Image 1: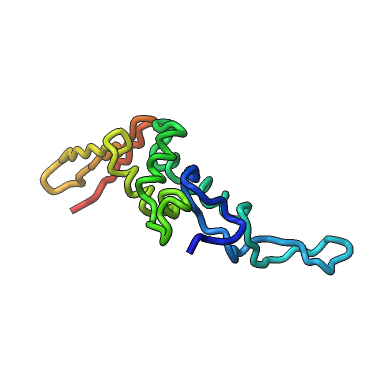
Image 2: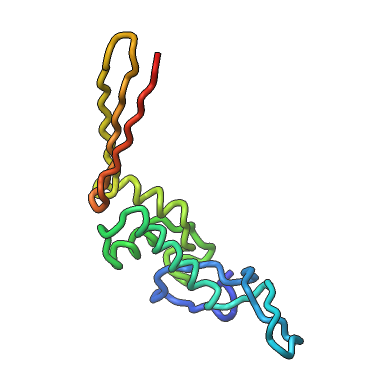
Length: 148
């Protein structure tokens, strides 16, 4: 199988994405006033491109500001699902879950969590402070007080 007839084919294709029978918003063809939009299935490269852009955005959100365009493309390439026709549709089909899980294992993208507990008294409340941050975001500190 080489994919849909409208697909780009060849070794120059970087990555493939679903583009056949994709649920989308479309205008009803018999609506003369063009006022009523509805959902329907469409096919084409215009349906596939948003899948790749969406995965790139998910990668960015998993590691904000740390990865270049080239990095995101390479992550998408190494985390693809294999295709029946290797090299005719790029390295494989883009996989959002694999891409995000991969990014979360990268040292520069891991979040650090530091927790300290401060006992106030043996029978009184205990205060726990947790700070979470990654390399590009401001630290978030949560303080919890519990009673025994």
